[in-house]
Image (tube, rainbow, N blue to C red; front, side, top):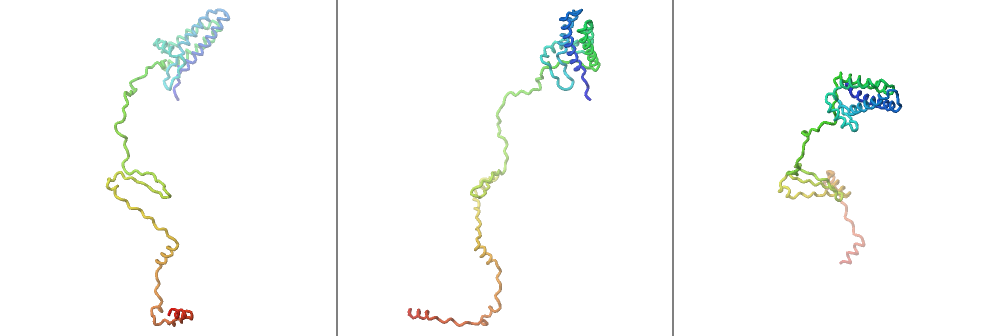
Length: 250
């Protein structure tokens, strides 16, 4: 559990007490209460409390949200030295300020609020808290790096060595891929490259021919090996038309 900063609560309580005391003092003066002179004292005391409590103290942990126009008042409180930083002094001051406020009914509520504010400041002082100015610190210029001049780079950026592949380019349905070899010497790049030959397309006739060629041959039957055992046929007789043709030619 984080430690409670009682001075922060005392600061808000002091501002609320000053508002209540200011309103009660104005009512006491305008209403011409008995002992209305204490109302004038209440106006002065409430403005003094507002001037002292308007600048917020710097928190130990976290960021501090400054009030609007608090820096001029923070300079005044910082000039007071120990009287402005020590919370024991504020505890005693608020106890003394609340005494005259208890003599009239209009300023009684503001006086009681100042008593509560002094009690909270006493608790903050016992915890070792102290007021510290915020927003008045001078920025440390030693940590800032100043760039005197900017010069363009003298060396080109490093590039990758080796083969650099270019994307494939489609031309007429043929995918070609170009590869440049930077690491090989110039003579190797000047050598002619073999031209790729296109494979002949196979038609149904060539496919059947190749199949017939690749088919294994069977040995002839035994009857074909002995020609004498084959029956011979007589030669065909010439027909009448063929005989007439022979005579005409003769």
